[in-house]
Length: 201
Image (cartoon, rainbow, N blue to C red; front, side, top):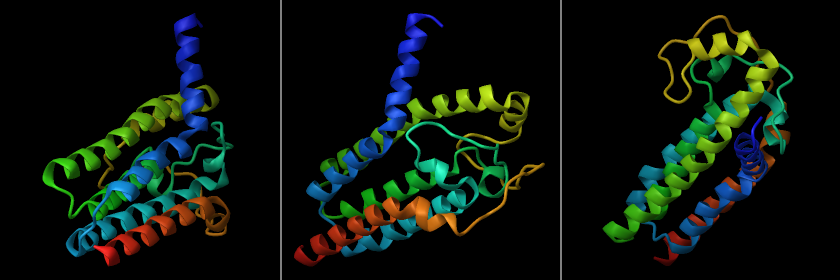
């Protein structure tokens, strides 16, 4: 591995380890600068809840390893949402972020709203564009042809209409509480801030 490749890998590892903090920054900006309206809340929150539901569905299959500071995969999961799209956690996160971005900015002017929404989602895309190759490199090293075959069947972002076969893995609802406690706290905090801002506006 040359120096450039090594540095790129180190950067991806760092971003992966700090992904929670990095993804929290746009939420803090929205909470500070957003001006919600009743309409923006009514249209944004269903999208946010849909994203969280997708995330919980994915975590039920992938388990608590999703909270690790480094990539861990005891097995290659290809069932549930992973039969439709390779990165359901990140698809769910993106929908949740988009929902909150719309919800928080209903009374912001057109340009500030566009900047807040676009900036929040661009920051998220930047993080994911860095860590997805890092994860996939690990999965390819670990599972080899099995992972390559999976990538040929299942797209990375835009889901299939019908689930791909074969599938392996099972849903375990018991991991949700342990794996998602931090997400639930963040989601709840965003709802609380949104409610306070709506009442004051």
